[in-house]
Structures are given as structure tokens and as C-alpha cells.
Length: 302
Image 1 (cartoon, rainbow, N blue to C red):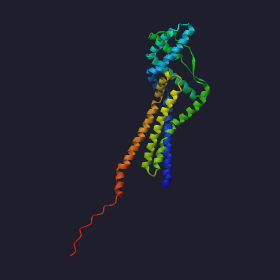
Image 2: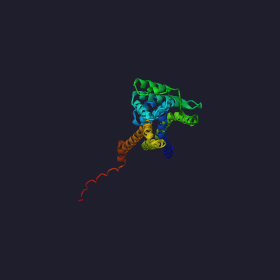
Image 3: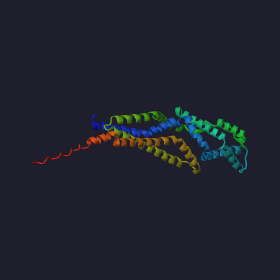
Image 4: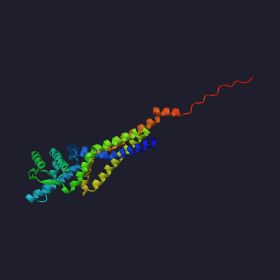
């Protein structure tokens, strides 16, 4: 293989590998992070102590309780503040953290079962077991109005059947890509470096491309956060939405900055060893002209 062909092939493989880096990290994050129920629940668990999330949950649950209470027995409007205060107090208890974890687990299981099942059906979750657990713990902790919370088997719609088809296709693609994209990126990078005419330059290009891919991924996460929060209907819900988004993408952000750090570190080390390493010193020494011996002393003629 000629030198020019090796250089072109190496450049193509390295460019393809660097292009796959951010997409491989994104697919792996979805497959091994979001799709795993245990990791999802662990990721969401700290949000039970976030003030913005607790306020949104308290307002939503308080409004629901008031609708049920007023349907059963019309109350004066002055009762509503006491109900909301009681729910806000509940969000600061251990019972709320338990219910938060149970609700997230039930929701995640329902969504993932629907994505893995090709049958067209609306994704629902039954919150009655969670509500019953909350009601019992509230009663044990003597929280006001615990007996007013209705426990009914109500199917709450999470995803409509018409929305599942594109989500299933996307999930199946990411399920495969989560493993093979990172493997393909590594194989292309190693092959590109192996066939390169100048391997040190190939390593340097691969490292810089990896860092650039990590920076692109970090930028995509930041832009996605802005777009996600802009779609929320209320300003009061945006802090809670931001907290949820940051918790879900924490691993992805860490991976993106790790790619930047590793890429720049390898690039700097490659550049330094190429400029100041023993091989570089020997090359400079061999390229330098040989010293000319000084002329010997001349003898005077008689």
C-alpha cells in the first residue's frame, strides 16, 4: 500500500471514529443509564429533597386532594391552605421519599415494558399501591387529613398508543447502538492509527477529535436543557424541570467532560513526546551537519 493511500485511509477511519464518539456516548447513556430501572430510581431519589421538586409535587397532590374532598363534601375555600400545608409537610417526611421511589419505579417499569412490547396499547400506571402506602404512613405519623386521601385503582395514562411506535423504533436503535457504536469507534480509531504512515500524528489527531466530540456532546446537553425548560408551561415548574434534567443527564455530562479531558491529555502527551522525546532528540542530532575539524597548524617555509 502506498504512503498516500495509507494516509487517506487512516484519516478517513480516524474521522469516522471521532464522529461516532459523541453518538456512542449518548446511546450508551440511554441503554445503560435511562433504560435500567435500578439506576433510574437511584438517580431520581435525591430529587425527593429538592425544594423545587417538592413544591411542584405538593401543589399537584394538594390540588388533587382538594378536588376529591370537595366532591365528597363541599368545603369552604379557607380549607384549601390547610390542605396544602399538610401536603407540604408530608413532602419533608420519610414517607414521601418512600412514595417518590415507589412511584418512579412503577412509572419506569410501565414505560420500559411498553417499549419492549410491540403491542399497541396506552401506557398506564396504577398508583393505588403507592397511594395506600402513603396513606398508611401519613396516618402513622399523625399527618392531618390522612383519612381523606382516596385509594382507588385509577389507571394514569403516561403515553398514548399512537406515540409508542416512533419511541419503540428509537429505543430499539439505541438498544443496539449502545453497545456497538462505542466498539465501532474504538475499532476504527485503532485501525486508523495502525495503518497511518505517521502514527504519532494519527494519535494526535484521534485525541483532538475525541476531545472535540466530547465538547460537542457537552454543548448538545446544554442546548437540550434550554429547549426542554423553554417548553414548560409555567415559570414555577422550570426550576423543578431543571433539577430533573440535571439529575438525568449528570452521567452524560460527566462522560462528555471526561472525553474532553482524556483527549486533550493524550494530545498534549503525544505532542510533548514528539517534540522533546529521545527519538526526537536523536533525529535532530542526526540531521545536524557534522562539525568541521579545525585546520591544523601550518609550518613556516624556510
